[in-house]
Length: 121
Image 1 (cartoon, rainbow, N blue to C red):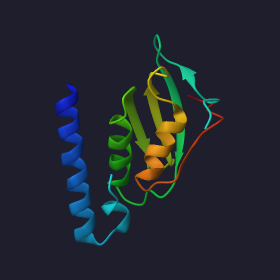
Image 2: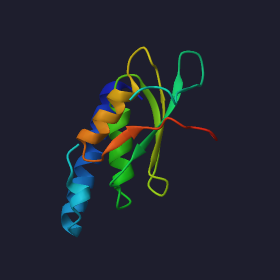
Image 3: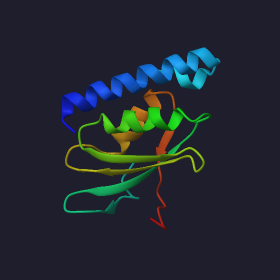
Image 4: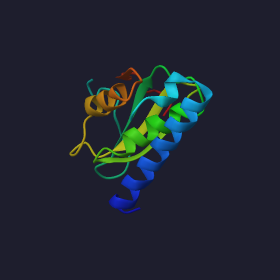
């Protein structure tokens, strides 16, 4: 997906999440949008990291977290599990750091830290 289309799609999803959240009265849904010890090599230059994400309370929260991560230059993909409270991110370490990803998600309203034990990936 081209960058412009990805940016527009992200903005539409974020706006939709905020509108739905406001209508049902869920504060968590109206939020605007560490070290790499746990990083694992994926393909080529890519690595995978697990982020521990707090504060996800409804089905739209993981979407907000995923969109926030995927907007960062260097993030190739993000899968977010509300049940586990984790985000699994494939990224290019030459473009973005795990700490930068954690800060972006925290700034979006979900306190986040980099997992240091990622056994089982």
